[in-house]
Image (tube, rainbow, N blue to C red; front, side, top):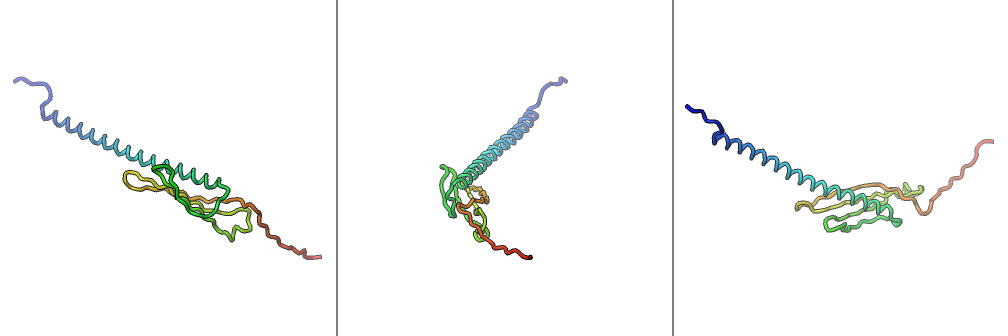
Amino acid sequence: MCKREGFTLIEIMVAITIVAIGITAIVQLFSGSLRLVSSSEGYTRAVVLAQSKVRSVVADSNLREGEYTERADNAYMYQVAIQQLDKDRTAPLQCDLYAIKVTITWESASNEKSYTLNTLYAKKKDTIVTTSTNIMPTGP
């Protein structure tokens, strides 16, 4: 009997099946990674836009309470809310305290995503309010 060298058809088919399963798994990992990169890109851009909007709100010398919405570009929208906090408690102080809330919304893969940045800002008052107290000396 002569012994043949090489692979049988069944061995080749099993090897091709194993390689195909491995390649399919790798392709699915890559596509999942690309989706995550795309999602993180949207959140990163939203964070940068929110921080930029907070800086521009704080830099405005006419800072006052209110809410407004504006479009950043075709994909992102700002929602800004400014609220003065503790007016009665900050009246004698040299600054007013504001809560600034910036929410960025955008569309990503047919669903809406959002990022909200909250911060507090102490704005120096234009006029200083002072209170005077009369102190009477005691003793001889």
